[in-house]
Length: 268
Image 1 (cartoon, rainbow, N blue to C red):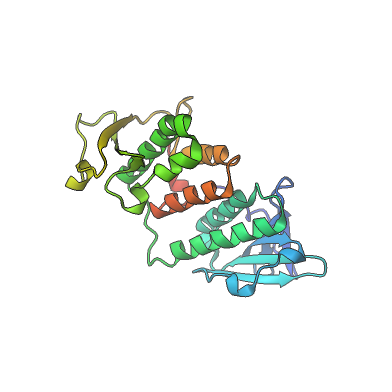
Image 2 (tube, one colour):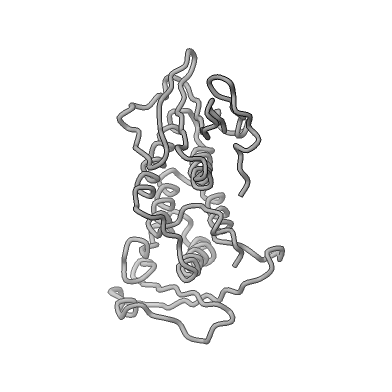
């Protein structure tokens, strides 16, 4: 993973910064303070300044509001630089989540909501990566939603059908039809694992079992993709939908334990 702070010089006073992108509605900066600490700075109009009480406490990261003469800044400081990869994932998540905002107030509100979600993630005693089986399962569900449901129902309804992350017995409830989605490796034996009898006991009139077969291929292959790239594609498609649909999707993938990390870049 590329370290965006590595080529920023440590300043003799205050901080040294580099603009993330000139295409984002907010001015976002990677930066370093006088001690070489890693910073992420969000600059916005004074009118968009959030109440300090809204700011969550983040494990290992200091969060502060820094007023300036003609603007306001939200400053995130990483306490220990060896943890920069997770910090970068958080920052990239904030960048993505707010990039389609129409004004500063909307963007800041989105960032605060994302920080609250990261608060829940970081307060866990130990970060648990998704297992290979969980990654396959999530990919299978996302592919079914993207390739089967969305062409018929659109993103808003399709995401509302996704019940698996909420602990429902089946992965999807499409009106009066329950759908359980399984994923298997192309090299595995031709059977699937059922984790509980509830998965096969639908409470709806109709029930379907969908099986996806995934193969590991060369990363350079045209059809290669990873969990990260699949979710990036979905997020790109969701950029034209409403805020509620995007927020529901983000909430659901968070429920299953997904946070964008380099670990999930391996193609499937």
